[in-house]
Image (cartoon, rainbow, N blue to C red; front, top):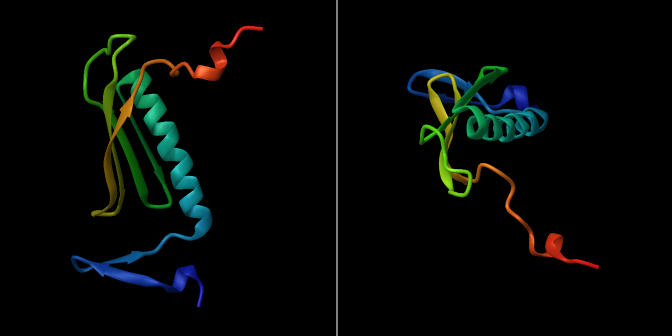
Length: 101
């Protein structure tokens, strides 16, 4: 039995479990969606029936303030994952990057 043979039912709709390769691609798209939503306010992409959506929860963040991005991954009508992610408009400084020689 392979990943294409495994399926489940969700509200009368046949839902196929993703393969390992699809999961890796969806994870990469989710990271891209979070980054683009942080920059531009929202991002949406589809891949093999999956829909990845990310939306920034504020209009334009202050450059020094943290803000939230909502992330939702769905397959058809079934929500696979939904979360709120804390983000910053620019990379956080790391303590070891501030060392001087």
